[in-house]
Length: 361
Ligand code: AOF
Ligand code: ZN
Image 1 (cartoon, rainbow, N blue to C red):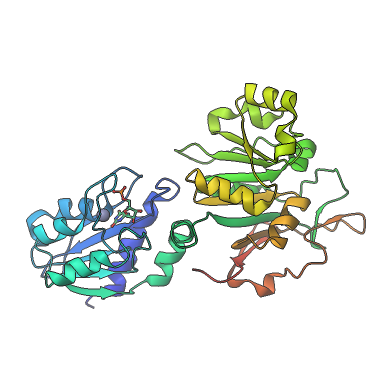
Image 2 (image 1 turned 135 degrees about the vertical axis):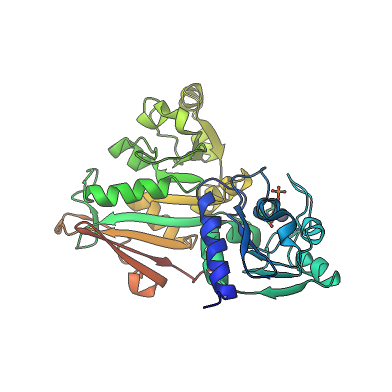
Protein backbone atom coordinates (compact mmCIF):
# COMPACT_ATOMS: atom_id res chain seq x y z
CA UNK A 1 0.00 0.00 0.00
CA UNK A 2 1.32 3.44 -0.90
CA UNK A 3 1.94 5.56 2.20
CA UNK A 4 -0.24 8.67 2.48
CA UNK A 5 0.63 12.21 3.53
CA UNK A 6 -0.71 11.31 6.98
CA UNK A 7 1.71 8.38 7.22
CA UNK A 8 4.74 10.51 6.39
CA UNK A 9 3.51 13.23 8.77
CA UNK A 10 3.21 10.64 11.55
CA UNK A 11 6.84 9.84 10.89
CA UNK A 12 7.79 13.53 11.05
CA UNK A 13 5.88 13.89 14.34
CA UNK A 14 7.78 10.91 15.74
CA UNK A 15 11.04 12.65 14.90
CA UNK A 16 9.80 15.95 16.37
CA UNK A 17 9.15 14.23 19.70
CA UNK A 18 12.80 13.18 19.88
CA UNK A 19 13.47 16.76 21.02
CA UNK A 20 11.06 16.43 23.96
CA UNK A 21 12.17 18.40 26.99
CA UNK A 22 15.12 19.94 25.17
CA UNK A 23 14.01 22.55 22.64
CA UNK A 24 12.39 25.26 24.80
CA UNK A 25 11.76 28.10 24.14
CA UNK A 26 11.70 26.70 20.61
CA UNK A 27 9.12 24.14 19.50
CA UNK A 28 9.80 20.48 18.83
CA UNK A 29 9.88 20.11 15.06
CA UNK A 30 10.37 17.08 12.84
CA UNK A 31 10.83 16.78 9.08
CA UNK A 32 10.89 13.99 6.51
CA UNK A 33 12.00 14.21 2.87
CA UNK A 34 10.39 11.83 0.39
CA UNK A 35 11.99 11.49 -3.05
CA UNK A 36 10.09 11.85 -6.33
CA UNK A 37 9.80 8.05 -6.48
CA UNK A 38 8.30 7.83 -2.99
CA UNK A 39 11.22 6.81 -0.79
CA UNK A 40 12.14 8.38 2.54
CA UNK A 41 15.54 9.91 1.81
CA UNK A 42 15.94 12.29 4.73
CA UNK A 43 14.63 12.87 8.21
CA UNK A 44 15.55 15.04 11.14
CA UNK A 45 14.44 16.96 14.18
CA UNK A 46 15.20 20.13 16.07
CA UNK A 47 17.44 19.07 18.97
CA UNK A 48 17.72 22.31 20.95
CA UNK A 49 17.30 26.07 20.63
CA UNK A 50 20.21 27.49 18.66
CA UNK A 51 20.82 24.29 16.69
CA UNK A 52 19.80 23.65 13.09
CA UNK A 53 16.11 23.36 12.28
CA UNK A 54 14.51 20.00 11.51
CA UNK A 55 14.17 20.77 7.80
CA UNK A 56 17.88 21.50 7.47
CA UNK A 57 18.82 18.15 9.00
CA UNK A 58 16.38 16.29 6.76
CA UNK A 59 17.48 18.12 3.59
CA UNK A 60 21.17 17.61 4.40
CA UNK A 61 20.56 13.90 4.78
CA UNK A 62 18.63 13.72 1.51
CA UNK A 63 21.15 15.71 -0.56
CA UNK A 64 20.43 15.42 -4.31
CA UNK A 65 17.74 12.84 -3.72
CA UNK A 66 15.47 15.65 -2.49
CA UNK A 67 15.18 17.00 -6.05
CA UNK A 68 11.56 16.84 -7.21
CA UNK A 69 10.50 15.40 -3.84
CA UNK A 70 8.19 16.31 -0.99
CA UNK A 71 9.11 17.78 2.38
CA UNK A 72 6.91 16.91 5.35
CA UNK A 73 7.26 19.18 8.37
CA UNK A 74 5.38 19.40 11.64
CA UNK A 75 5.52 23.22 11.61
CA UNK A 76 5.49 25.79 8.84
CA UNK A 77 9.07 26.22 7.57
CA UNK A 78 10.55 29.49 8.80
CA UNK A 79 11.44 32.48 6.68
CA UNK A 80 13.19 34.59 9.31
CA UNK A 81 16.73 34.78 10.64
CA UNK A 82 16.78 33.94 14.34
CA UNK A 83 19.55 32.01 16.02
CA UNK A 84 19.79 30.19 12.68
CA UNK A 85 19.09 31.18 9.07
CA UNK A 86 15.72 30.81 7.32
CA UNK A 87 14.66 27.37 6.06
CA UNK A 88 12.64 28.36 3.00
CA UNK A 89 15.61 29.23 0.75
CA UNK A 90 17.16 25.88 1.68
CA UNK A 91 13.97 24.13 0.57
CA UNK A 92 14.13 25.88 -2.81
CA UNK A 93 17.82 25.14 -3.31
CA UNK A 94 17.22 21.48 -2.53
CA UNK A 95 14.73 21.29 -5.42
CA UNK A 96 11.72 20.32 -3.29
CA UNK A 97 8.48 20.51 -5.32
CA UNK A 98 5.89 20.06 -2.62
CA UNK A 99 5.68 20.91 1.09
CA UNK A 100 3.20 19.28 3.48
CA UNK A 101 3.03 21.02 6.88
CA UNK A 102 0.97 20.19 9.96
CA UNK A 103 0.33 23.74 11.12
CA UNK A 104 1.17 27.40 10.58
CA UNK A 105 3.99 28.73 12.78
CA UNK A 106 2.38 31.09 15.38
CA UNK A 107 5.67 33.00 15.74
CA UNK A 108 4.82 36.58 14.63
CA UNK A 109 8.05 36.58 12.60
CA UNK A 110 6.69 33.73 10.48
CA UNK A 111 2.88 33.27 10.73
CA UNK A 112 2.14 32.31 7.13
CA UNK A 113 5.08 34.11 5.53
CA UNK A 114 6.99 30.86 5.09
CA UNK A 115 4.10 29.39 3.11
CA UNK A 116 3.62 32.63 1.14
CA UNK A 117 7.28 32.64 0.12
CA UNK A 118 7.16 29.02 -1.02
CA UNK A 119 3.91 29.56 -2.93
CA UNK A 120 5.40 32.56 -4.68
CA UNK A 121 8.13 30.21 -5.93
CA UNK A 122 5.50 27.76 -7.25
CA UNK A 123 5.99 25.14 -4.55
CA UNK A 124 2.83 23.13 -3.99
CA UNK A 125 1.69 23.50 -0.34
CA UNK A 126 -0.66 21.42 1.79
CA UNK A 127 -1.34 22.52 5.39
CA UNK A 128 -3.23 20.80 8.21
CA UNK A 129 -2.13 17.17 8.00
CA UNK A 130 -1.64 16.00 11.62
CA UNK A 131 -2.54 19.46 12.94
CA UNK A 132 -4.05 18.34 16.27
CA UNK A 133 -1.07 16.21 17.18
CA UNK A 134 1.33 18.96 16.15
CA UNK A 135 -0.43 21.54 18.31
CA UNK A 136 -0.61 19.23 21.32
CA UNK A 137 3.06 18.45 21.00
CA UNK A 138 3.97 22.13 21.25
CA UNK A 139 1.25 23.53 23.48
CA UNK A 140 3.70 25.70 25.50
CA UNK A 141 5.10 27.20 22.28
CA UNK A 142 1.63 27.95 20.89
CA UNK A 143 0.39 29.51 24.16
CA UNK A 144 3.53 31.61 24.54
CA UNK A 145 3.37 32.86 20.95
CA UNK A 146 -0.38 33.55 20.86
CA UNK A 147 -1.27 34.50 24.45
CA UNK A 148 2.11 35.94 25.48
CA UNK A 149 2.32 33.86 28.66
CA UNK A 150 3.50 30.39 29.69
CA UNK A 151 1.28 27.30 29.45
CA UNK A 152 0.11 26.47 32.98
CA UNK A 153 -0.55 22.95 34.22
CA UNK A 154 -2.12 22.34 37.61
CA UNK A 155 -1.00 19.05 39.08
CA UNK A 156 -2.34 17.28 42.16
CA UNK A 157 -2.37 13.84 43.76
CA UNK A 158 -5.71 13.26 45.42
CA UNK A 159 -7.42 10.63 47.52
CA UNK A 160 -10.56 8.86 46.30
CA UNK A 161 -12.50 11.36 48.42
CA UNK A 162 -10.83 14.35 46.71
CA UNK A 163 -8.34 15.32 49.41
CA UNK A 164 -4.69 16.36 49.20
CA UNK A 165 -3.61 15.52 52.75
CA UNK A 166 -4.96 13.84 55.89
CA UNK A 167 -4.95 17.12 57.83
CA UNK A 168 -3.82 20.73 57.50
CA UNK A 169 -0.03 21.02 57.81
CA UNK A 170 0.49 17.33 57.15
CA UNK A 171 2.42 15.79 54.28
CA UNK A 172 0.50 12.72 53.10
CA UNK A 173 2.09 10.32 50.61
CA UNK A 174 -0.73 9.18 48.33
CA UNK A 175 0.77 8.07 45.03
CA UNK A 176 2.43 4.77 44.17
CA UNK A 177 5.96 4.36 42.82
CA UNK A 178 4.59 4.06 39.28
CA UNK A 179 2.72 7.37 39.57
CA UNK A 180 5.75 9.03 41.16
CA UNK A 181 7.92 7.99 38.23
CA UNK A 182 5.39 9.48 35.85
CA UNK A 183 5.40 12.73 37.84
CA UNK A 184 9.19 12.95 37.65
CA UNK A 185 9.11 12.35 33.91
CA UNK A 186 6.70 15.27 33.56
CA UNK A 187 9.00 17.44 35.68
CA UNK A 188 11.77 16.68 33.19
CA UNK A 189 9.75 18.22 30.34
CA UNK A 190 8.60 21.58 31.72
CA UNK A 191 10.48 24.86 32.00
CA UNK A 192 9.42 25.62 35.59
CA UNK A 193 8.01 23.88 38.62
CA UNK A 194 6.04 25.98 41.10
CA UNK A 195 4.76 25.46 44.64
CA UNK A 196 3.31 27.65 47.36
CA UNK A 197 5.36 28.54 50.42
CA UNK A 198 3.19 26.32 52.63
CA UNK A 199 4.36 23.31 50.68
CA UNK A 200 7.98 24.36 51.27
CA UNK A 201 7.27 24.76 55.00
CA UNK A 202 5.40 21.45 55.39
CA UNK A 203 7.01 19.08 52.84
CA UNK A 204 10.44 20.71 52.38
CA UNK A 205 10.57 19.36 48.79
CA UNK A 206 13.73 19.24 46.67
CA UNK A 207 11.77 20.04 43.49
CA UNK A 208 14.14 18.17 41.22
CA UNK A 209 13.36 15.66 38.46
CA UNK A 210 14.72 12.37 39.77
CA UNK A 211 15.34 9.08 37.98
CA UNK A 212 14.86 10.78 34.62
CA UNK A 213 17.15 12.46 32.13
CA UNK A 214 17.01 16.22 31.88
CA UNK A 215 19.57 18.19 29.96
CA UNK A 216 18.52 21.75 30.77
CA UNK A 217 18.28 23.51 34.14
CA UNK A 218 14.79 23.43 35.67
CA UNK A 219 13.54 26.69 37.20
CA UNK A 220 12.02 26.10 40.65
CA UNK A 221 9.53 28.69 41.81
CA UNK A 222 7.94 29.47 45.17
CA UNK A 223 4.83 31.66 45.49
CA UNK A 224 5.70 33.39 48.75
CA UNK A 225 3.97 36.73 49.32
CA UNK A 226 5.39 37.31 52.84
CA UNK A 227 8.83 35.84 52.13
CA UNK A 228 8.57 32.96 54.61
CA UNK A 229 10.74 30.48 52.68
CA UNK A 230 13.37 29.24 55.17
CA UNK A 231 16.93 29.85 53.96
CA UNK A 232 17.75 26.26 54.92
CA UNK A 233 14.96 24.80 52.73
CA UNK A 234 16.21 21.73 50.84
CA UNK A 235 15.17 23.38 47.60
CA UNK A 236 18.01 25.87 48.06
CA UNK A 237 20.55 23.09 48.33
CA UNK A 238 19.59 21.66 44.92
CA UNK A 239 20.65 24.72 42.94
CA UNK A 240 22.70 22.59 40.53
CA UNK A 241 19.31 21.42 39.18
CA UNK A 242 18.45 25.00 38.17
CA UNK A 243 17.65 28.49 39.41
CA UNK A 244 15.32 29.12 42.35
CA UNK A 245 12.93 32.06 42.13
CA UNK A 246 10.92 33.32 45.07
CA UNK A 247 7.91 35.31 43.89
CA UNK A 248 6.94 37.81 46.53
CA UNK A 249 5.34 41.23 46.99
CA UNK A 250 6.79 44.66 47.85
CA UNK A 251 5.88 43.99 51.49
CA UNK A 252 7.56 40.57 51.45
CA UNK A 253 10.71 41.98 49.87
CA UNK A 254 10.75 44.74 52.49
CA UNK A 255 11.76 42.08 55.02
CA UNK A 256 15.37 42.89 54.29
CA UNK A 257 16.96 40.18 56.46
CA UNK A 258 14.80 37.41 55.01
CA UNK A 259 15.55 38.65 51.51
CA UNK A 260 19.29 38.93 52.11
CA UNK A 261 19.55 35.41 53.53
CA UNK A 262 17.59 33.90 50.63
CA UNK A 263 19.72 35.77 48.13
CA UNK A 264 22.84 34.65 49.96
CA UNK A 265 21.64 31.08 49.33
CA UNK A 266 21.43 31.86 45.62
CA UNK A 267 17.70 32.46 45.24
CA UNK A 268 16.36 35.22 43.02
CA UNK A 269 13.71 37.27 44.84
CA UNK A 270 11.19 38.54 42.29
CA UNK A 271 8.68 41.25 43.18
CA UNK A 272 5.17 40.75 41.75
CA UNK A 273 1.67 41.98 42.56
CA UNK A 274 1.15 38.85 44.69
CA UNK A 275 -1.29 37.17 42.30
CA UNK A 276 -0.63 33.85 40.62
CA UNK A 277 -1.28 35.55 37.28
CA UNK A 278 1.34 38.21 38.06
CA UNK A 279 3.81 35.48 39.03
CA UNK A 280 3.18 33.55 35.84
CA UNK A 281 3.71 36.74 33.82
CA UNK A 282 7.05 37.29 35.57
CA UNK A 283 8.10 33.76 34.57
CA UNK A 284 7.01 34.42 30.97
CA UNK A 285 9.12 37.58 30.96
CA UNK A 286 12.11 35.38 31.83
CA UNK A 287 11.57 33.25 28.72
CA UNK A 288 9.84 30.31 30.43
CA UNK A 289 7.11 28.72 28.28
CA UNK A 290 5.58 26.13 30.63
CA UNK A 291 4.90 26.06 34.36
CA UNK A 292 3.80 23.06 36.38
CA UNK A 293 1.99 24.13 39.57
CA UNK A 294 2.33 21.26 42.03
CA UNK A 295 0.48 22.70 45.04
CA UNK A 296 -0.45 22.92 47.77
CA UNK A 297 -4.08 23.61 48.47
CA UNK A 298 -3.90 27.41 48.64
CA UNK A 299 -1.94 27.84 45.42
CA UNK A 300 -4.14 25.36 43.54
CA UNK A 301 -7.17 27.34 44.65
CA UNK A 302 -5.67 30.72 43.78
CA UNK A 303 -4.53 29.53 40.34
CA UNK A 304 -7.97 28.09 39.64
CA UNK A 305 -9.84 31.18 40.87
CA UNK A 306 -7.60 33.50 38.84
CA UNK A 307 -8.34 31.37 35.75
CA UNK A 308 -4.71 30.93 34.79
CA UNK A 309 -4.88 27.14 34.46
CA UNK A 310 -4.66 25.68 30.94
CA UNK A 311 -4.34 22.00 31.77
CA UNK A 312 -5.20 19.84 34.78
CA UNK A 313 -3.33 16.65 35.64
CA UNK A 314 -4.70 14.59 38.53
CA UNK A 315 -3.27 11.45 40.03
CA UNK A 316 -6.31 9.82 41.59
CA UNK A 317 -5.27 7.35 44.28
CA UNK A 318 -7.33 4.65 46.06
CA UNK A 319 -6.86 6.10 49.56
CA UNK A 320 -9.66 7.61 51.60
CA UNK A 321 -8.62 10.43 53.95
CA UNK A 322 -11.95 11.14 55.61
CA UNK A 323 -13.61 14.28 56.93
CA UNK A 324 -10.44 15.81 58.45
CA UNK A 325 -8.77 15.72 55.01
CA UNK A 326 -7.71 18.87 53.16
CA UNK A 327 -9.95 19.11 50.08
CA UNK A 328 -8.58 19.76 46.61
CA UNK A 329 -10.15 23.01 45.30
CA UNK A 330 -13.12 22.75 47.66
CA UNK A 331 -16.41 24.29 46.72
CA UNK A 332 -15.23 25.17 43.22
CA UNK A 333 -16.60 23.80 40.02
CA UNK A 334 -13.66 21.69 38.99
CA UNK A 335 -14.37 18.17 37.92
CA UNK A 336 -12.59 16.02 35.40
CA UNK A 337 -15.89 15.87 33.50
CA UNK A 338 -15.43 19.47 32.40
CA UNK A 339 -11.96 18.95 30.91
CA UNK A 340 -11.50 18.70 27.15
CA UNK A 341 -9.52 16.07 25.23
CA UNK A 342 -9.30 14.09 28.45
CA UNK A 343 -6.79 11.29 28.69
CA UNK A 344 -6.88 8.55 31.33
CA UNK A 345 -3.99 6.22 32.14
CA UNK A 346 -3.74 3.58 34.86
CA UNK A 347 -0.50 3.92 36.84
CA UNK A 348 -0.27 0.92 39.13
CA UNK A 349 -3.04 1.34 41.72
CA UNK A 350 -3.51 5.01 40.74
CA UNK A 351 -5.24 6.58 37.76
CA UNK A 352 -3.95 9.59 35.88
CA UNK A 353 -6.73 11.84 34.55
CA UNK A 354 -5.64 14.86 32.53
CA UNK A 355 -7.20 17.33 30.14
CA UNK A 356 -7.48 20.90 28.91
CA UNK A 357 -9.52 23.52 30.74
CA UNK A 358 -10.45 25.44 27.59
CA UNK A 359 -9.54 22.90 24.94
CA UNK A 360 -6.21 22.74 23.11
CA UNK A 361 -5.15 26.01 21.44
C1 AOF B 1 11.25 25.46 11.82
N1 AOF B 1 11.96 24.33 12.11
O1 AOF B 1 13.09 23.07 13.48
C2 AOF B 1 12.26 25.11 14.24
C3 AOF B 1 11.52 26.25 13.91
O2 AOF B 1 16.21 31.08 16.64
P1 AOF B 1 15.87 30.15 15.53
O3 AOF B 1 16.54 30.51 14.26
O4 AOF B 1 16.07 28.69 15.88
O5 AOF B 1 14.31 30.33 15.24
C4 AOF B 1 13.38 29.88 16.18
C5 AOF B 1 12.01 30.02 15.60
O6 AOF B 1 11.97 29.28 14.40
C6 AOF B 1 10.90 29.43 16.47
O7 AOF B 1 10.33 30.42 17.31
C7 AOF B 1 9.92 28.96 15.44
O8 AOF B 1 9.14 30.05 14.95
C8 AOF B 1 10.84 28.48 14.38
N2 AOF B 1 11.29 27.17 14.78
N3 AOF B 1 11.04 26.39 12.71
O9 AOF B 1 10.79 25.63 10.70
C9 AOF B 1 12.47 24.12 13.27
N4 AOF B 1 12.76 24.94 15.45
ZN1 ZN C 1 13.56 27.02 10.07
